[in-house]
Amino acid sequence: MYFEKIQTIPFEGVTSQNPFSFKFYDANRIVGGKPMAEQLRFAMSYWHTLCAEGADMFGAGTMDKSFGGKTPLEIAEHKVYAAFEMMEKLGIRYFCFHDRDIAPEGATLRETNENLDHIVPIIQKEMERTGIRLLWGTANCFNNPRYMCGAGTSPKADVFAYAAAQIKKALEITTKLGGEGYVFWGGREGYDTLLNTDMALEQDNMAYLMKMAVEYGRKIGFKGDFYIEPKPKEPTKHQYDFDVATVLAFLRKYGLDKDFKMNIEANHATLAGHTFQHELRVARDNGVFGSIDANQGDMLLGWDTDQFPTNLYDTTLCMLEVLKAGGFTKGGLNFDAKARRASNTYEDIFLSYIAGMDAFALGLLLAEKIQKDGKLDSFVENRYASYNSGIGAKIRNHETSFEELEAYTLANGEPKAESGRQEYLEALLNQYIASAGQIL
Ligand code: XLS
Ligand code: NI
Ligand code: NI
Image (cartoon, rainbow, N blue to C red; front, top):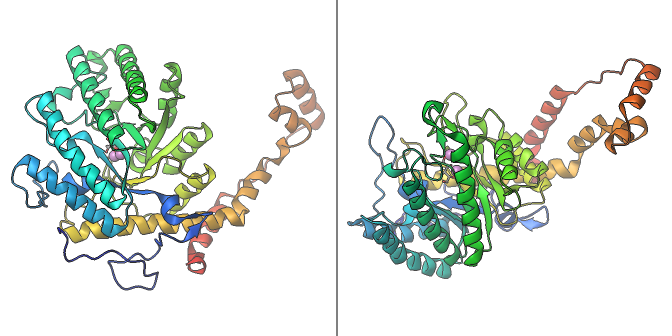
């Protein structure tokens, strides 16, 4: 046991004074026809939870995450048991990892793969013991200095080859562990200056790497979804997978749009100058909504702070998009989030997950209420009602022409400007949030 002081976190409801309890997340409560646990499909991020020790550009870590291990491999073993104890206590049924989170990198690729082969069966046993599953795996192709100029978009062919070898292994272990997804996040896939960059070749190469990944994955029996996780900047100045729309254009150019869906991260959306809801909507409208990295940024800070999500407006509007997309299939809500550097105890990690899970549980309840109530939907429907008949229906069905539209306008004169009622709708959203008590 690594967290003796902490018991399994119970659901106690909104009046509970116990910080180590859920106020809103009631795993078995039916919402939108499914238990909350199935609607939300929470996942633990291995990297933030088991690995990140709070180091930043200005100072060392503030937490020790060796869990009593001495050698790197021993520490990796302890992390597995600590991870599963934590997930069990929090009632989290999925996790996500990078290859390098679960096992240390050795002196050679062969040695690194041996380290993975040592750890993966331990994870597999814990998965069997607990029933906890792998939401998605990925390869960390951004940390090692060899990837300083990119992995799939490196100017060096040897680096591209190394990345391919690493992704091959990551796909094998993800498949072995029954992963429901595999993520590409282009950590270093971008550039800092065009003065030294052949952007066209870099993108061609990246697409080829992804194509090979899909082909190899399917060949070895990987049945999960492939995702790309957009992010506009950091660590490079300009990342190729800027936002959902940019990634879509890339996928379509290379004929990969049937093979990939999006893994949308809230903090990356805001870095791109979008709302979280915008990115989810673009994905939904284009049939590529897949999974979510649940976190939030700080609007006053221009980087990826990966904070635990507590903003109710965001979680509500997010879950509204998820419900409208028909819910998750293979994706879920992965907390790509870490406790702040100064929240440096294990208790803080539990409290952070409780805060995030509760914020999404309440967001889900509110989203269901908003959807059932139908006021927002009918407002939008009415706003576009002129497309349901007459000339509007002809436009909607692509059955008109410039000649006809000119004749129509000459006959009908100036269109009537109608209010968008933004402030009324924002107040309505407040009203829903304020009436949350009625659904708890
Ligand atoms: C970093 C990304 C990363 C991905 C997985 O900004 O969010 O954590 O989710 O590589
Ligand atoms: Ni992420
Ligand atoms: Ni991020």
